[in-house]
Figure (cartoon, rainbow, N blue to C red):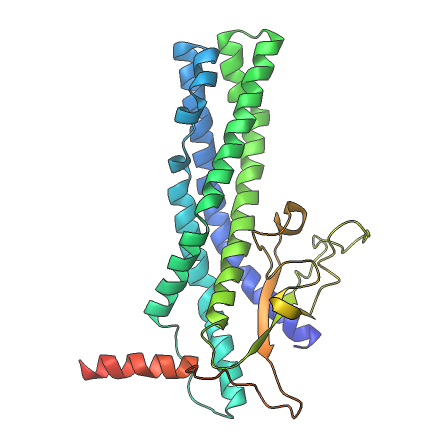
Length: 294
């Protein structure tokens, strides 16, 4: 990919991602605020000690799970269809074909979504555990300060805590969307008839890690722009894709980079075919034939 192609690719992905991020940031803020309100109500009714002892029951991951699940699905549905067409264009290029481009088959999209939901279950637990840790620290701090019941309750619902919840909602939405959309792309790559090389497409603005003052001991996603994954599909920072949950927080949290792919070619410049693997186009045609047969 040329520099301009990478810029256009990232901007196209970013427009789709931001639309989902904005919607679900609002929903996540509301969900986090509801969790704080539940603690607030228990403090007023039963006292701070009861809230502290019952925190695991009061702050339940089911408060945020449905929102995060919907966000993952919507993010994948927004971002993966254009990427699917990108894979079709690669196959058309390899086959020197000018066949029409099709929409992503519903069953293939459903397969990717199911995979992402199964692999992302632990993330909801981690988010909820951190919420409990924040509230627990607030309660212990209030106890140390000798605050009254009403003062403790007010601390839980304070502007400072609410601002933190708003910031955290945005961070959750951005991090999760980057993860699931790029993991979904990686899963779609497995369906290609051709061997693909994964490309790191960095966010192209001043907020990108390493843009302003690169540091040796800090992630530098700006410098990774256009980098191809090495052996085992791993990039130089140890991640398999932007937002890889196996990576450290410094590499993953708030990342807005994107994954792209290109054909892997042999010494003669020919696209390398995976043995026995039908092309994405053939998978689509099989589905079309089944529909026509019924």
